[in-house]
Amino acid sequence: MIICCGEALIDMVRTPVPGQGHAFLPLPGGSPYNTAIAIGRLGRPVKFFGRFSTDFFGEILVKRLKDNRVGDDLIIRAAQNSTLAFVKLEKNKDPQYVFYAEETADRSLTIEDLPSELPAQTSCIHFGSIAMTMEPIASTIEAFILREGTRKSADQMDGAPVLSFDPNIRTFMIKDHDAYIARFEKWIAAATIAKISSSDFQFLYPKLEAEKALQKILAMGPRLAICTLGTKGALALLRRNDGSVTRISVPAVSLPVVDTIGAGDAFHGALLSWLDMKGKMSRSSLVSLSEGELYDALFFAVRAAAIVCSRRGAESPTKKEIESLTIPEKKTSAKTSAETKTAAKKPAVKEAPKKPKASGGTEKL
Image (cartoon, rainbow, N blue to C red; front, side):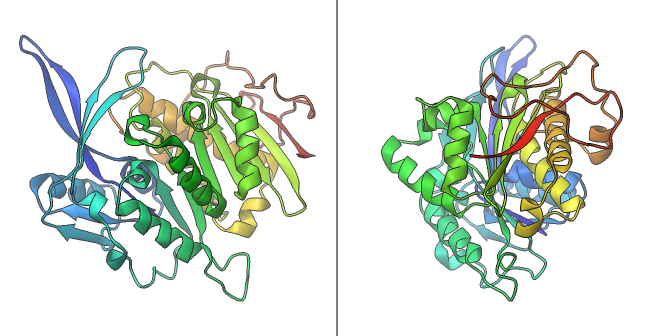
């Protein structure tokens, strides 16, 4: 069971209306919300934890979760309004956002709303995004993941669920860069998996190139650190129990791009779903992933993100759509110039012979 927590809002997407200019189309959204739906569409058990309005937007949000097999029994309902995020899309540019979130339902999640205990089958908690820039929800989720991350059992390593973090930076939501970094690094230290985009790194550590920033993240505590690189695919570093680090990069998949809304969420949801599908959703299993398994997980996620980009809005794919996606033969390895210590090689992955080559290896960092 995967639990996603954070904001759930309405994206008001600027849309052309023939003969009348533009209007704003209301679409359910929010990064952890989209991630939960991505997981549900891939057939994995998932619930959403958060606070939803009882207004008609809140009803839309809950209905979409149910329609995509996301459990809603951890959702608190409140009379406050739903958060609205107005989105402007322009060709070859990142989406532009304006948020209306003062005293709205999702950001008003408090410590008192935390469940006293989670379902026994909970194996992963996913958190992050703009929820971590607003109060009281940021402090509530922080307390939640710190509580669950230190849970112990007879098996000390797997007593706690995997904690998966995606900051999904929206710079206009962050007023004090240094204060945010201090809290961000606390969340990173608690996380088992950290997925960060190259554009996030430009805000977080602007003086570091992506791979150096990823190494910095790995050193703070996560076992798996991933950087999504847009058209260059994705790069992952996995820290094992003996201190060695396995580095795997995968190429992007080229499909016609309609917009990029929800691409990172689809990537993250697909990655977590792959781990769950393969019985790898535990701390001990994660650090024992082979190079081939890590490649497969990343490439599954890259394909999911590519499919979302080929559609309007955050419409994540099914497992069948991902697995049946035809990969253009012209795609080659996403090897980066920063890889100097490890020879490029394809992991021993049992897939079709047309599969693009990966850049991988294990070394001490």
